[in-house]
Length: 623
Image (cartoon, rainbow, N blue to C red; front, side):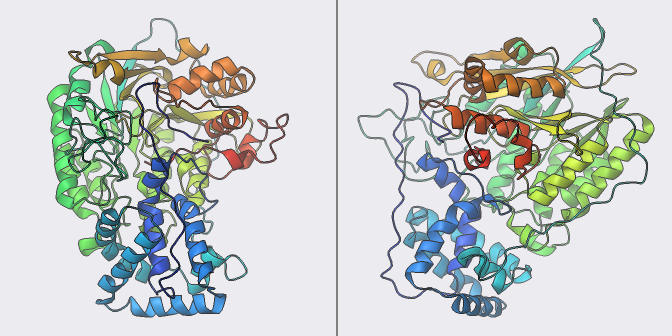
């Protein structure tokens, strides 16, 4: 099911550049599958989006593997690779990569494979491999991936078993869980807080008006994109409906035009600051993005407290977030130290300490409310460092349990912010997080994430029956246009600052910049309210049961679903219609805050004839 499309008269063609591999180049080299792992984790997301596809991530594997493995399998099958030969190759890889000179050698072979399978344009292949090769070789030599597991991934279960991300459990305190106490809607006239929510800003330093929005690279509208054909318009001044990020002027327009949406009590900002040119980024590039956008936020939001979370694009290589036990030049210390310095005016010393260690923190923004900012890269399917050890990286979930138990003991409520939503995480991490949410349902008042660039939510249920909704994670739409979206931001109305406040979400509003209007000659950008959730969907409140009921109302009411579909894409939906399989799969995603859990969707499909809704489950691609 295509996720992205174009509106009439404004779109640009997208052609998939999928071609069969050239099998005339001899036997496979020792570095070939290694390169497949690199490119699956790095480039395949952008390139699948480029081709307009929307596949389901492989069950239990990093999402990129599920997309790239068929190409690799076809390539190796053409060489008649047998299981014994495969295991021999990977034994040799394990031996060879222990030698420092092999890094460049494997990288050269990797570039050849990238070009052979036409995974990216040649220049992107070259840059991506050289950027990632050192970290990936380090991960490979430290990882627990055995030759049998690698060959099982490539050739099937008869050759070996892929179980590198095996099941694990965190420990919960022996304190009995209190009886569930769903919050009551606050009395009329009680204070209401407004929280500005920013996510996925994706500033492109090299955005250039008039350049080709449909270039061959995974990111366009840039200085290196060239000019479009005379038959098509170039990139707009404020942004473009294509595979493009935002110029700084659009982000400045967003922040300077917040007045009608305010005033605000505080700001949650859940990351992804740099652009999507992930094949060609340096640490200096990432730090420039961090400091430039942080300064812009401070300039326009002034004394407002801002509470950030770490996105998956802040690092380079992208998605590369080693656990704290990785030291030296491979560690993330360079990034966390820069964040601590940039965000020091907003965060207390205790929060800055854990930020420097693992990119997460907790603080108390007001009496009775604890805010926890998670580093969701430690749950990421795309974080290649988790090949070494994916069991509660950095001890973050166990730390979260301690924070929630302490809040329960004090009678405080908790908000959690993070970048990647829990339903998009590695299975064991996601299931443990789900278990934690269920245990502390009385304490947890709100969950706020981004990453998917679209407007959606994920519902949590009791673990015993998976039928009683007990929490909801709100997934706010992106500031960036990537891909083919209007720029946008979110405002949450929260039960306010008073003794006994539930601190739950009461409603939310979404604001957008209509690019078609903004890019008209002589026009000025106008950020406008797109919708209010309760009013638009007819919700009695914004508690979990109301969102659960909305999903099932949309199952039977196609007009209501089409409204959701329009707003899901920030007012710029795909031109292709969303039929029954698409609709059910989209609704399934709203119910699925637990990764790889088809039981959560079992009530959606009895009358549809679809044997397995997960076959068409449209998990948005990782951005």
